[in-house]
Picture 1: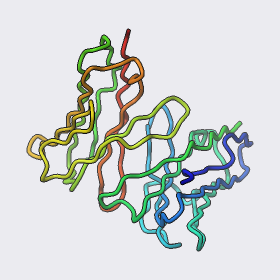
Picture 2: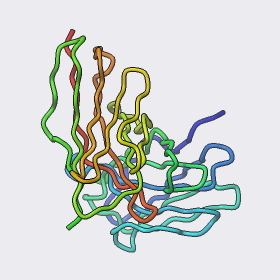
Picture 3: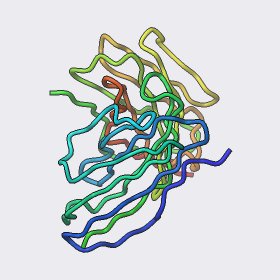
Length: 114
Length: 110
């Protein structure tokens, strides 16, 4: 069974630009969550999608958005990039979501904003 | 405010000893708690899940305890090996969101 795949692995963008990150979950998993990881803040929850609907949301500004497709693949978009958005963005999939199920993480996308 | 606290200082131990990592939380009432391992540049990997009605869970050399009165979970690695060196994260469910602690870095010296 293939694991969670995130693309691209590395990205360099300029302030003010926008970026789209992609996540392909494990086959059969319907829940996809996104996290931002920085040395200072650790892993912070961005949002969770389940069956194409946003089910949970963290405390991030509206510049951070996402969506999920009918095949459970998910994308995350960050508009008007700021230097502070430089981070490792991780996606995790699970069969049903937060309740009592383990999360399988991808390798992450390392975003650098210059 | 809600907090999940793990020891931010790295834990250095000698090979063969037992490593004990702590996860404390406040203003949460999680139904379960999970532990993950993260290596540099990689995503976290699930290790163990323990439910609120379970006091202890074991998997090979790993043991987790969950004390809902103390609001604390302890994670033990017995007979530690240099390959166990990594950052260990605890995570708990908060209304469907998996919330992580900052992690504790474990260094096992040969």
